[in-house]
Image 1: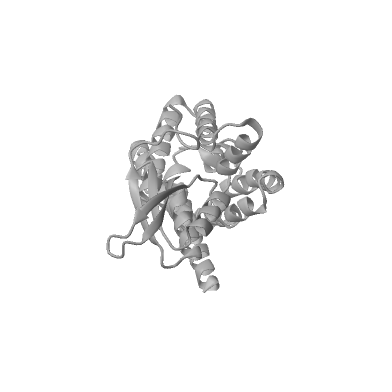
Image 2: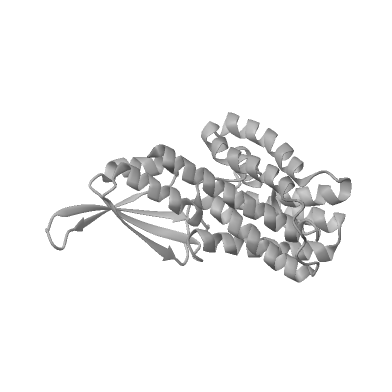
Length: 278
């Protein structure tokens, strides 16, 4: 059973990486749209120095993997390793794919959509493509920046580099593509809400609570309830997580109690530690 689950996850990461490679080769790379991330840096170096994008992705991630393994733990690296290898290889294997458009606006929008679909599928499969996500986690560890702030800062830096290397106009297109990608990732994973409130009714609330705290580093609130039919007292867990964490939370819950009852709802806004500060 675990083997089947592992194969499904790896297959999802592989397919997602392949879709990302298609978006890069058919839309973004040929049109010099460096929409943030390590792939965006790869686009810049490809057009300036003729360095293959796949090589940039791999070379940039190697030192990040070493640092992350040392300071963040091997587990954080393992989730990113397969996605990074798949993407760096597939972006070169699929390089002969035809360029579908040279219209910058079309390339920006459709490149962002395809990239978002691929990256969303990778995240949904429990994987990652490393790169700026690992860099942001390291910034969080060393400097105390939130992961979101780190990602935003790195992406804007890469887009600014594209503005210097290419033109201000192409940098603006890259910013649009980054926005489209982020929205499509949200849609592919869980919808358009920024956060999710998860209510968990289980016979093993303590075990589930400990696993969520340990694996997701998210707070859990214990609520008291009563079964309407049986009249029995129930303990309900409330946990607010980001979209990218919902799939992992479900796996944690059902690994501890396959008979648990889980409600996931959209949250309009969350203020507090781990989310937005008022």
